[in-house]
Length: 305
Image (tube, rainbow, N blue to C red; front, top):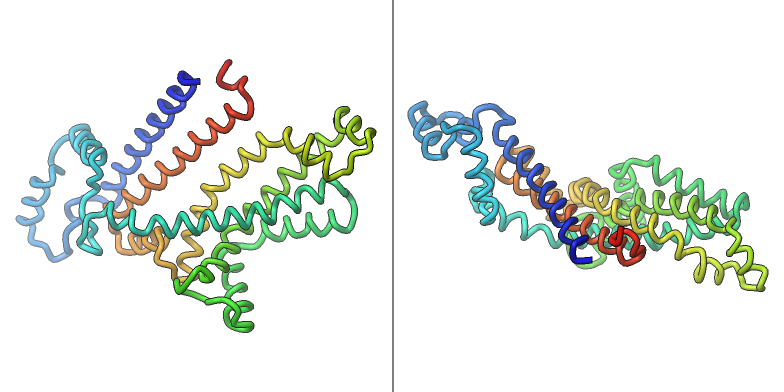
């Protein structure tokens, strides 16, 4: 088991090395980084002095080595927009984005799992047709359009929930519904397809022949055999939830990491964009590492092979 964990950690470090190359390339995405990081009216001699002081006149391999050394210590530079160190800005916004992503995941599970189970248990009934129509609708509607509709219904017309801003915990309900709609549909479809396959197996027929009810058969026998694909799709949706959080935070005016990234892109704040990309990639790598450990727990053959 320890060898398996070390192997997965090594794979994760390789991925982060590749991400660091991409993040470093962002420095030159807009052309001359010295010109991009300084005001437009900066004199030429000051630009040259800054280029020499920042090391932009050195070779690219040496610049990359210096960049990696700074990243390891948590130094991504200073934000051009906020004139503050970048990493504290990103980490200060990260908790709200994670709370929104986890809230969206809770919505996805609370909606997707019952839909998938009911659709698999009673196929071709009105419940199955309704569930499949809802899945298709959730996958077809853009997040930003759904967010606007939810604001108009629950925030403006009914006045049940805050339409924007962060006042209390209720402010996360509409964004969580927006973020969790698409993952709920995907989870329901994957669960339905796998459950329908498992419910045709001989051991399920035997359990039903013993007189067990359908829900008991699903809970005690069938669900155990769909945990691997279900775990996979749930873990993969966390990346989708982080992407959806960017749209939700922009529409609902939430001061999270997604909104910060949009502002950084608008202001061409390269150091802030670099920190956002690297922190997001690190979070996804950690999710995949946790997923591998869950896999090894659910199926010991994975780390014994």
